[in-house]
Image (cartoon, rainbow, N blue to C red; front, side, top):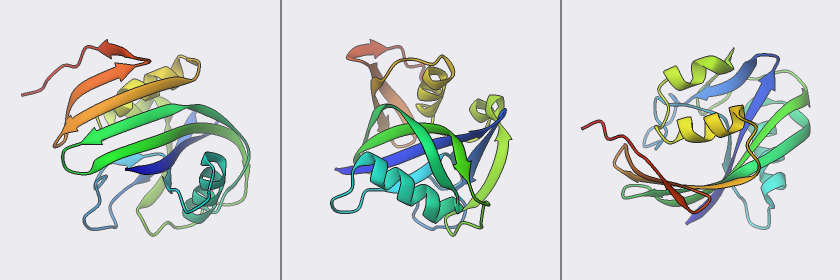
Length: 160
């Protein structure tokens, strides 16, 4: 089981995304994701958030909002607790990232990009300005088979 952070950094109507195309054996290979990574020993969610954003983008966050916890359960990749954040206050210049290609894209485009099916659920919650939430997403391979929001089962459409 691992703890990670993920942040959607907004600039006007655009969001800084990472297209994960540079690492082999990457569970997010070819997907578009926000900015984040794994906790280091002794880090809080905020410590990890600030370090990962700085390392991956060169940006320094000035303010952020802790949006929720997403529990990923995967038959291939194990269990992950992802601490989800958003930010629109930062300074610095975006640099090259060794994990993929960084690009500012319109927020509305995110659901049409190659992303995990469950990401669409928490992106909608962010878009709706939902209060802090707990979301469990269970995958078999790349297929979302269960979604539970704040303890209540959501309908999952299977694309078999």
